[in-house]
Length: 383
Ligand SMILES: NC(=O)C1=CN([C@@H]2O[C@H](COP(=O)(O)OP(=O)(O)OC[C@H]3O[C@@H](n4cnc5c(N)ncnc54)[C@H](OP(=O)(O)O)[C@@H]3O)[C@@H](O)[C@H]2O)C=CC1
Ligand SMILES: O=C1OC[C@@H](O)[C@H](O)[C@H]1O
Image (cartoon, rainbow, N blue to C red):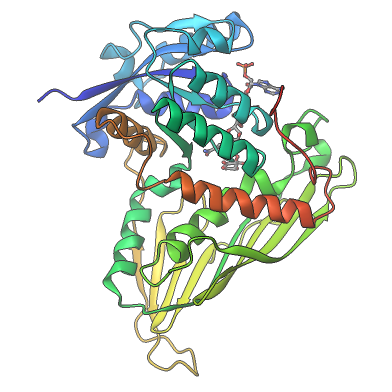
């Protein structure tokens, strides 16, 4: 049977849109996929020149680039450049929209796309706050359209491998969790318009990096077979501030899963990450440790604990699960979108909207209890 082809419209021509588009053009068989494939039929930018430049770049890969496959196999044959995002939402050759704009625009862009009748994959963080997200979910459900937050890490080979370990039951009940996404980022050298510096773009560490400690909290604790609490809450939080613009330099928050355990989550722009310990789940029978970087880890360790008091390790095993060669790692989430739309589903079981809401509420709580300039920020709601 021939594969199902999903026709994509790409919104915005920045860094991550380019990465996503290139992954759409990689041969699916390079990641052992044969049931779905992708076509880019529209690109939208605030300027038509930028949209055309983006398309020209995709059509001219370098020698040996894995995404050369797409242009050679007709995946860009019908692509159109639009000098507005609306042009893409209204393009009849588009089934699904990828939103790759700054945080503050996710709500408006996703809403406009849904109202025009398109399915949407929206970059993380989904929205600025839970009200915006609730509104998008309501619109998608009312219009029977697919909607998902682009938490690419959930679809990486390592995420499935870790899930198998948890399902096997060999680690037992979770006792505590910690996850950290830190990187030393020189904010002082960046212009006021930088997306980490500018509060109006939803700047700071929490909204940009927070989805990654959160993805491991969700995969290791929230989706753990032992968890019964569907609405884990932030019980404590702290933010340090970048004086120049008031955004959060770092955020720390503690989440409690009632009846199970606590988790400590960190985002930090002032230090490099804890290399071998980006996420750790300690359970009654042993530990599961994930190595840096949290957005795209390749290695985890399992350490059974024969003696709980001494925390001694019986036999540490190391497991490597890299993304397939030639794929940056965003092709997997695109495949999920294609499969769901092919099957008439309006949300993904692996990245359900309820789980995006859980994390969005954490961010709201950390911001409201903090002192950053994005404390009371709303996104593009109402614009
Ligand atoms: N999944 C992942 O691994 C990653 C996800 N991201 C997420 O992707 C989103 C975009 O990030 P990134 O691609 O790095 O950002 P960029 O600044 O590189 O690109 C953003 C694009 O949005 C458009 N845009 C519209 N309005 C504005 C505005 N007021 N200021 C700046 N840009 C604007 C522009 O495209 P145009 O001019 O064509 O309209 C711009 O190129 C963010 O939400 C971020 O969190 C980022 C990095 C990695
Ligand atoms: O999504 C992301 O992943 C990688 C980070 O470096 C980046 O800031 C963030 O947006």
